[in-house]
Image (cartoon, rainbow, N blue to C red; front, side, top):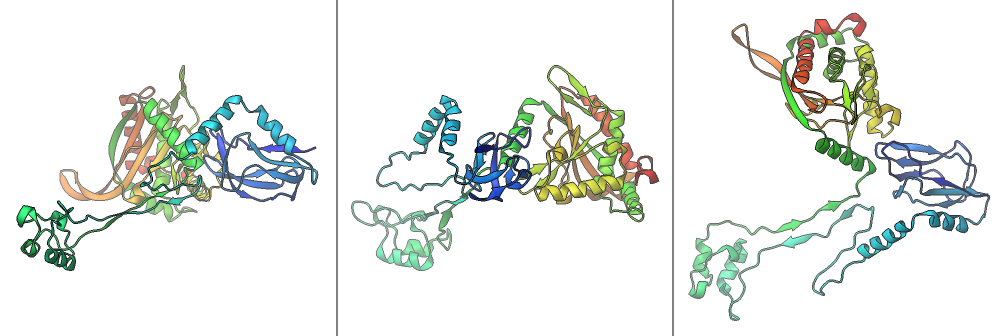
Length: 425
């Protein structure tokens, strides 16, 4: 008997999925555990295996199209089995409201009747569209009483010199532009023709979820920001020494992760989250690392970061970064963060503020290291500084609490001998 394979819910926030690639087509046989399709969720593109066996009789979602969770993805059964009744029966189960909604959408999709002079361009759904370009050129002044407000000779001179006569105040009868107006014009040598154009592409599932989560965070969590400047000369020397013996190359971001995790041990109120009726203080420390990908940000999690060595942290973050760019992250990779770090220093950004990544109470925005004059022991010398900004949810973390955490973090970063040891490399 034919069975329906439904669009799976592959993450806790997924409401619909996009079929990025089909690995089977109608008429192909499929076995349990065999790869059926790649599904683009709100966070990654994941492989979806079939739990049923049989022949593919029907495909409900074409490649590149989106469908809600639990809708018909495909139907498998015996070869040549009729599935029309099964499809119709499943459609009847949908609430009557959905049918009304479909009719409303159809009505909205029907182009409104336009005046004959106006042109309309239809835009196919889910396809990147290069919109029709509109060219704007400023035309010479309109005629008045059938008589041109630009003399023929002036018009010829203007065309030869690429001058737009609509910008010239005429000195002839009735404001007519004449030869001497063109010769005396100093407002510009050429007429500019501009072209308006734009491209529209469908919003990906990942971008939809990023937009929703960040908007919810920004508008429901009362953010406040604390910025502090760190002296980085000692840490730069320490990193150079560490990389001479470490099995993998240690980045400044790895050092930041280690320092944050160590500081959180002493400040559990920062390692917390707002849960409505309760505030959760986490004893474990899971650091989310914001990774930029083409469609936005993903935040894989380094678990128990306070207990890991720098080499372990470096290896994990590099692996997560590559998986994120390849869209190979799995739900277990991005769930469970208790604190998040966003680092834009490698892009030359000196200072910025970040939006809190739920359910965390805080996120640390890390800027770049720059050489700058500093005063040390009463002397002006060249040094290296780095600014970090802590975004805090004021429902959970107060100003004094956040400031105390930053002081501990600063002390560890400026005195790396207290942070590091051979057991931590």
